[in-house]
Image 1 (cartoon, rainbow, N blue to C red):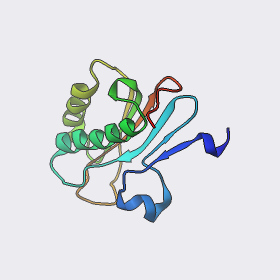
Image 2: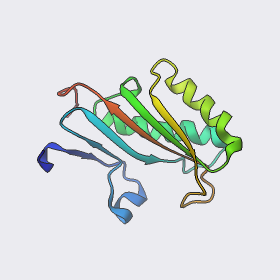
Image 3: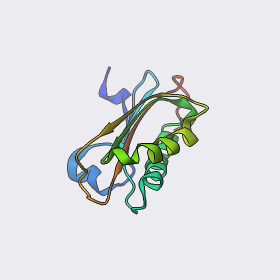
Image 4: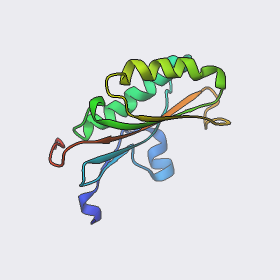
Amino acid sequence: MSSDAVRRISSGGPYEDAIGYSRAVRLPNGLVLVSGCTAADGGGPYDQAVAAFGVAFDALAQAGLGPEHVVRTRMYITHARDVDDVGRAHKELFDAVRPAASMIIVSGFVDPGMVVEVEVEAFGPVGEESA
């Protein structure tokens, strides 16, 4: 697969240039990989999860896909006590889609106010991508 066939999507986030990554990458086979998304505005675990998935949905939209195309999610949380809140947000957003999902407890994130980070993988038919 040539690198010309891979589409890299930026959200303009400050870490993209500083670290050297793309918010999302769309492969020619229809797979879209969305990098870890967080909520910069704080809030509780539920609010952060909803906001983080919103960032992921924006990236998917740039790739021509929507939440209905999501096939896998990963939720990273800093406290086991947040499982129910983050799980509730996930259920509200994906109950009809039912992607494969993981929730993993980690020691922390680059910003100590962040308690949730999410990753999303989606799949859409080749050629469905918007220009």
